[in-house]
Image (tube, rainbow, N blue to C red):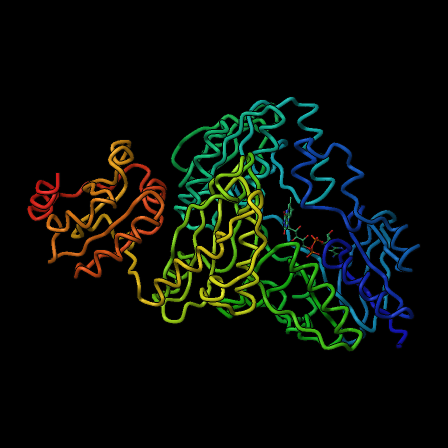
Length: 569
Ligand code: FAD
């Protein structure tokens, strides 16, 4: 083994896991971690819950201390030491001791950059007022807790409805504040497709969080030198004596840039598969780097803890001469909000549409998390996106009280392994009534999608519904239909369908739906075999409710539609 000197910038997720792995591989190496904050290896993912008091003991956020690093791993962790610059030619870094103010140099054989990301702070009037916070570190969360304690705010505005915004909304509500989320897009949780985000939106409203969509903050107002309200571009004024900015993060790549290292299209550090930068003695990991998207093959910026930890290990392996390769990211993520789990992996439909990729289909399912006859089963909403031509799995999104993340985990791994919907059909997954179903939601999603790829069933597109032209048939029971129906649909319950075929047109497409998509699948198979041009509206009425919560945009009913409806009524 060599006795190389490895310096690591940043001592949290990527940096700490790299340091520990290095030591396991090389007992002789000198390993020094520089962390500008007061703590290495803290649980940033737990910060919202510390603010909400679900975690009340701050010490629980400290995963490993400098003392533990020293005693267990023989690793030096220097806190409150900011790395100011890198000299790649001399293989030296310049470090500032933030306690003493002095600056010194350190030489390295290998350097690992894991400086993370920085929260975006939009340049808006009043953004630096007392009471306006971002959240990244333990001191940030301490400051927010102190503000709640000392200023007793009653109204909070959370700017940005992504992961951290939603977690903060819940935790501030838990502390008794009235919370408003302001989100620039027309949906919360931007990585989701809009209709899947609708479940989250409705859930937030049910939990008394106000949500202002498609509106952006324009300024922060003050009184007595502290924030009092947020004003939006549309002119709305939201009372807020506490504001959390959660409008995203950007890679902390300044050090790398100044050292002349190559950056990627998103401003993150460019690395190869072994996490090596454009300098052969410097590696970089975590939020600061760009990684390859498994599905699209493009470079992307995915600031998540899982990739950071795995990349830290891979950099350590590579430094120690082991063959190591980061496989890329599927952007698999999960968020909990008021008891609802929101999970996703791979690409969304809107991303494919933006890329003008038309070779895909999406199916919706609404299965229960475990056998419905066993107590406590709850519905989840699952969307699977796959390539139409060969069934390759491209992405999935799931929302539900229980079991959503487990299904997304399985599909995420399927994506990483380049699996198809036929593989999902055959996946062998845990089953007992209290845990799942003999046909697990993952299998079901695979089966529904495989029917499409095999050509056994055609899908109608929800977004084409407003265009009209198709004859809409609802095959639910009349009692279900009377509780609510899709604008313009006629009701022919599945069990009556074979006897009422004469009521259906042969010269127009027929779009069939039921409550969740299963009965309509049976109906489509019947209709297709009787020569009708029938397609399934995947996910049924349940999906309709999130696609068109306000009903269809109004459109004139054609004479042909009216005649068909009159005959069927
Ligand atoms: P970090 O863990 O941020 O560590 C970087 C460290 O480098 C920092 O401590 C910083 O002080 C230090 N540093 C930076 N520059 C210098 C310098 N010049 N000199 C010395 N030190 C420096 N991800 C998930 O997957 N799931 C979650 O539930 C989740 N929740 C989150 C909640 C919050 C509130 C936050 C802020 C993040 C969350 N994340 C979550 C993201 C996750 O924490 C990050 O993806 C992960 O920590 C990235 O690891 P990293 O090592 O790249 O950066």
